[in-house]
Length: 502
Figure 1 (tube, one colour):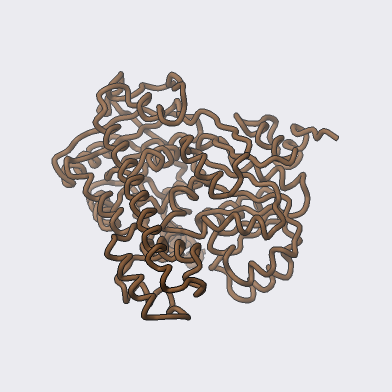
Figure 2 (tube, one colour):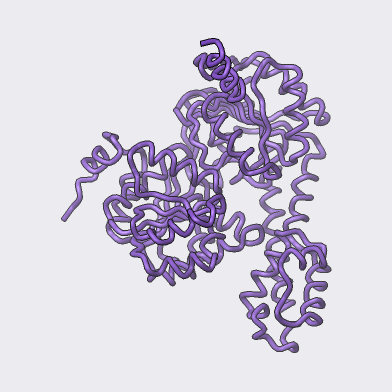
């Protein structure tokens, strides 16, 4: 029986039409196909699994990269009347987790991180529920993070097999053909149906400016924000610079400004995110830890204080602007030395040959069982990402479980060394692409999206600084309702004051 999708869309979500790509992806999923959907940021990718979850019955598992993103999506769904949804995460206390595990089969949508899927009590519980659809949201993370930073992304195929191979839906806003192939390869789903839609956003103007140093960049931002009032995101590759610039802006601007990065407490990060979402902040100075899945419609300006390590990251981050279709601007500020910082980040993510040699020497002396990860990282002076890269490869080769004879260690070490060299070459190539785009003298829009799609559409706004756009002509003004002018502390103070005077 053919389902009336438009009637289902109206009934469950109150919409009378689909956005580009949604209907096709949903029909494929309902027909039992494995699907890789590449839909632009802001086109409502989450509906592609939320509606099927209603129609398929059973449970839909959604693998999501960030706790804040999961919690936000669950909150929005419950507010809209979608009650049978839960996010299993480390914020839950023991009692909440136990209660959730007892009632897992009652949930239509179940959000988890890839790390939570490797938790022993979760692994024991999931096979007992009827999983009809397995979703990987922000699927580019498999390729972008899975190889070193979050290797549990590379174990998702095992979870899918343990769940009886339900249909799989992988969703992303940015994935070159190369990344698409990597996603399908790591999921062991080489025949996924690809639904790839244009990712060029026609409402964003592009500009790149070279500056002498970071102080000059900061002055430029101050100048722009003095004359423009609109929700603004400023991206940094350094936590220290995110904080430093936020304080500088606070000192000189009559705007509500905060910083956000992965070194903050989880509760503080969530508070800043909610304030920005609710128009209680004008400007947020953040690292790449912020923004994924943030559904704020009226961001008008995205500034990059530092260079992203690859074009995919850049497109993801500028995609947060203009989600409501309104005019938006991307501005990249750089100096001649800016390539050093992403190079340093690469060195912190990937181990060196000498690191690999130390690990194998340690393993030969240590025997089983191995110490905890924290102790190994401290003893061998490895970052979490460096150890994760090596540990995952060792697990694949059976070394961790003690299945490897000592005489085979040299060949395994050589194999991991070759993989390490391939990752260095790959990451260096990605950074080179970013640098080439920065220095490109022609149309920035066409050059940016050229690796991702064959045709780049004409924009609705001035195109770029190489064509017809001048940053100094920028005139952004976003009016805020008075209720949002106060911070949460000020609003709480007002409530107490009202209580005293009444």
